[in-house]
Length: 166
Image (cartoon, rainbow, N blue to C red; front, side, top):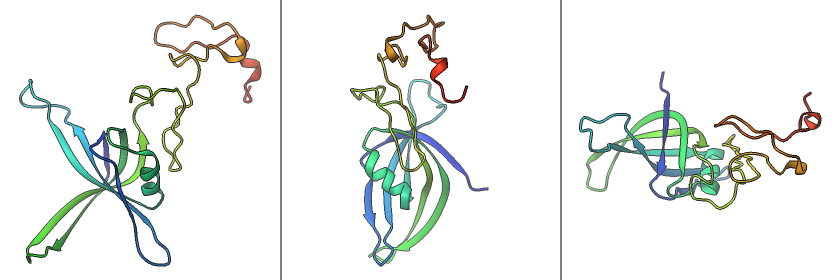
C-alpha cells in the first residue's frame, strides 16, 4: 500500500501551472517542512523538506488558499520518476502526490485577524468559529452563556430549540 500522511508548513507559495491542450489541468508544486517526531540530538530540531505535487481541483485549492507558512495536513502517495537533464545525466525524483489537503490550524493561530473559517473546494478544513475570540458562541442572539468547564466551548442557553436536528 502506498499511502502518505504529512503535516507541516509550506516553505513558499505553491508554484501553479496549467497543462496545455483542450482539457488543461492545474498542477501545483510546493515544498512542505515537516518536523520529525524525534531526533538523536535532543537539543536540535530535525526537519525534512518534502517535495509535493497536486493536480486538478486539489491544485486549484492550493493556488487559491495556500501560501508560505500555512500549516497543512495532506494525504496522498509517493511517486518516483526519472528524467535526463540537459547534461545527459539521469536524475531521479521522488514526490508526494497530494490527493487531500486540509488546513491544520485556525486562521487565528496562523496570525490572522478574524475568526472566519477556511472553506476549501477540496473538502478542506472548515473552521466556522465566530464570536468572542475564545471559540465560544457567546453573543448568539444575545443569550447569556452557560459556564463551561475549562477547555470546553461556552454554549448559550436557549440554543437547543433552534437546532435543526432536534
